Length: 253
Image 1 (cartoon, helix red, strand yellow):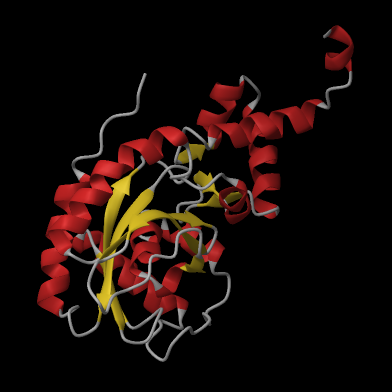
Image 2: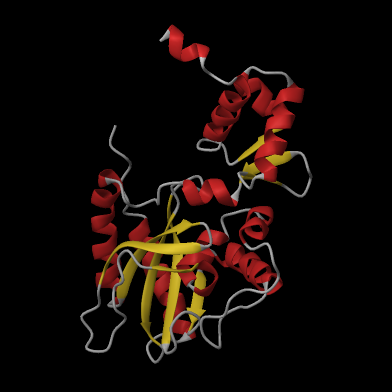
């Protein structure tokens, strides 16, 4: 063990330990990082600046705090794949499917993509297909947008460094400014909607499901054909999704 420690590069070790702090802290100031790592404030500042330059940390608008950057978020394991959370999600998915009658998905954010981790497919003859394991551009889906809304604006801008966003359909948001404005609305409403933005003729609504930090947040989404996904129906389904999300049990000890 002593021999292994002799090969440790202290600056690299400090950087790795700082990155681990983002697993338990949504934001970190230089002072807080220095205190947690028991290093000088100047050292914490240099390490945070290096992580920022490489995309592993993002500075907030005040310039005093840092959040997990897009490279770190991309490296994180998708929420929803562990056996504990998958087991606890089953009652939630069943309740949401019963209440809405539509296809239900649990989704996690990985970088600028949203991944479907589990769900239930509707029994309607005409329905949305459950796409477990499939990734979609986050800005084009209700689940992706509700998860993006839980990030800071600085984190969103780091994920989307240019103003122009890729279009998926003719109704997809294709500017970062429009996305940021939509995320403000989503934070106020507590839900996100998509009307043909990911798949033509399909509408969806999503609410936050679980997680207190970027690494374990999930969204609960209901997807349906546009003729059943009217504005009033989406609003009602959001209520039903929130009720189902409330059934999520606490992690086992």
